[in-house]
Length: 245
Image 1 (tube, rainbow, N blue to C red):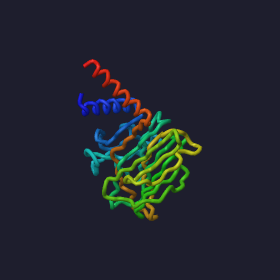
Image 2: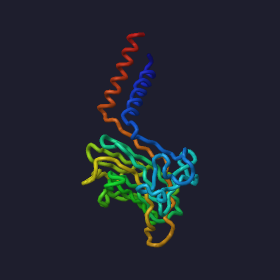
Image 3: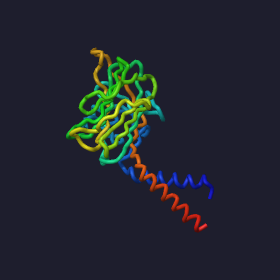
Image 4: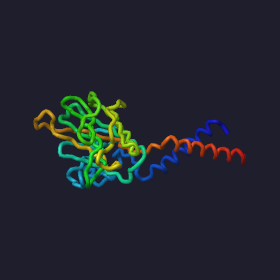
């Protein structure tokens, strides 16, 4: 058997096991399969605490992949609840697009309690008017140093969550915003992603938003020991195959 085939076997084995470990809690959403209009009730998304009128809009105005994305303006508060994410290492990632015409601010929030016993873990604030983005912990304390806000382009946001070690690291455009405790007096779980446009930070009554989101993904990260076992399993399968050949 050629080395290329060995690599393929090990890779396939690892991928299959990773999918099995992640189970139903993992998700990927690019909004392309949804009906245009309110996101409420589509793909697990809802307005804040089930209020349909608070849900954002599936739109074709912008898209990072495919033809559709999630569009939010003032009055929207859009949530994607999760269940069973109570241990292990997880990565939550998404892409954000802020047009230069937008005013106000918007939050990307990760919650450890929802829809009851509400509790916050991560609060990333994008300030459109001052062109800054920073991360706050669940208690509202700024972590790290704010970065320059990027507009008129799709920007990657990523959260590396270690529920076993009670920590989370937030990244913007692959640059670390800050690392802090996942929760203090809350719950050891990822309960929801909350996308919330806020008031005009300049103090006026200008339109808040729009802001767009695409390619939202939640994925379990296998621990190194698990990956090692997967590789050994692949080698064992290969050995048995060669013995029979």
